[in-house]
Length: 411
Image 1 (tube, rainbow, N blue to C red):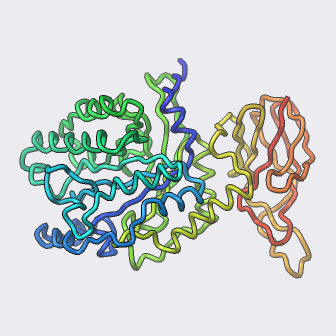
Image 2: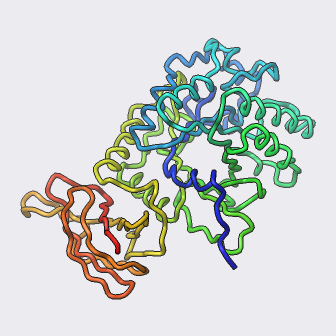
């Protein structure tokens, strides 16, 4: 048994490491999440009226790309069409339920792509396979699948080279033939290097599917390690997660995850080699909420402050106690250390976690030196075979990186 070699596009995708997910559509105007039409049983004729008030007045593709860049994200996946059936792109006559036929009067996917390219961010397209708008979805499924392929072909031919396509909805009809081969053939014809993802949902996290797919998905929570032994193809892994409890804008959803939680989740994803696709839900006008933007910028500051090697670093079989782990890149090991405490006068410092010796096993290389990446402080260490123990000093007062990284030079 052996692990297959990843295709070039898959290996490049794994090095992206961190991306932004954007759920934005007509539902954003209501501020009650992306499933509001279904959850509240809003009749289609009433729901469609939201198109008449959709202005996208604050949507700025380049500004969003700048926010992603500041967060350390390498790619953005935008909901070009969600389950509501409304398209942010020009559907070229397939229907008029799209952004150019609203007061916005613009192809918002084009603005998104242009903004990404201006900032060096790779654009990805989410596209639903489930559709609450098109009557053929339940009435004439084969006709609907042709409509779906025609829609995807527009995305593959009108916007230049894209990073990939991210599908979601096949779980809604588990017994149907979705004609996946025909759908993916459209992509390979026009975008041979595109990453293809089809979300398996909460009930089938991490499951592989059609052999043309390039990545498995984990939705919410934490991803588990991939066992690629004996697989016919190397699949990447990606975990998508919300900042609060909604994918689409939740105007009264204040249950935002903390910055430490998001930093630890990013680390947990990279620990198992998975990308972290973190979602934002823009307002009905197309603006990322201030709190979500601040959290993203905070993650970017952590990456910069700790010189976190979340892109090139790969799992290497090194494990530590608790949440600690290591990634390897070239001749360097990076040890990710959690729950260190701040050191200082007892009158001002509140103890949290601990300092001292942290042990890692599975280190197959001889280590020359170890230092903190954030301040260059050299750390004492001991090595006994594949077992390395690092004497981890605490944070100076006024500093707490949540996860601190020690860089080890190996022989």
